[in-house]
Amino acid sequence: MKLSDFDFDLPDNLIAQSAMEPRDHSKLMVLEKNKQVIEHKKFYNISDYLKKGDVLVVNRTRVIPARLFGKKDTGSILECFLLKRIDLNTWEVLLKPAKKLKIGQKLVFLEGKLEAVLKEVKDDGNRILEFIYEGNFEEILDELGEMPLPPYITEQLKDKNRYQTVYAKEGESVAAPTAGLHFTNELLEKLKDSGVELTEIYLDVGLGTFRPVQTENILEHKMHHEKYHIPEESAEIINRAKREGRRIIAVGTTTVRTLESSNNGAEVISGDGETDIFIYGDYKFKIVDALITNFHLPKSTLLMLISAFAGKNFIFTAYETAIQEKYRFYSFGDAMFIY
Image (cartoon, rainbow, N blue to C red):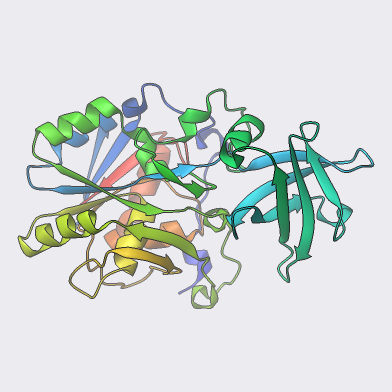
């Protein structure tokens, strides 16, 4: 399979720069894959397509304000982007400009409330920083850090919580599981009242979700690793539904990747894990029966995943329709429900 097969032209004005308010008033494109039918709705209409007994699985990871700006003793300012926690005080990070900080040199944030020392330069160019502080790191980060918006969003985020799902609970994601941004607490309650069962998984979304595929032969692409956790109770709910022939509906590709990574072919396995699953082509989905997702970047692994789920030709027809109908794309954009 070729990377160029997953390319398309998207007008810049369709890249959503801000979130829809209220959250559930974004557009919803509904795809019935067996009949190849496309419908145009609002996201709050999702309640018309979910039925009693369905299990709605959400990724309850929390996005951290991972972008920091620190000073060297020379006064030079560097951007520090937290990627992955190594231990309590040590993080793998991206630094810009990276070469300005040498091993053993220090960065100072907000007049010394937080400091960091460069400990290692990795082969891929990422850096390892050890942070020095008094008090609670998470509280300091909330005070100093900025939300790590994708590079295609150029408008400033006024409310940090708008790049957070209403059900975000815990975790260290550096990007939001954006399909979940459309839900309100009221809509979730309405779904539960109608008999839809809500359950959770956790996958910490990494920066790799934005990295483009570089190889024309997509089989040569190396996926990034992401940590996940499936609570025992969630596994029981999902497995019971599968045995009873009820639908498992994944909110977002992060949820899909978690469920399709941690199973024995028939049932989900609870616990901690790490996934680098790459879903494309004729992949046979073992757990997920329906999917809520946003509109994705050209040539992205996420576009390849939904093409595997619904069929590439049908997805590209839907994307052409979305462009014609001026749907909003990417993180703050509109949604699809595929079943």
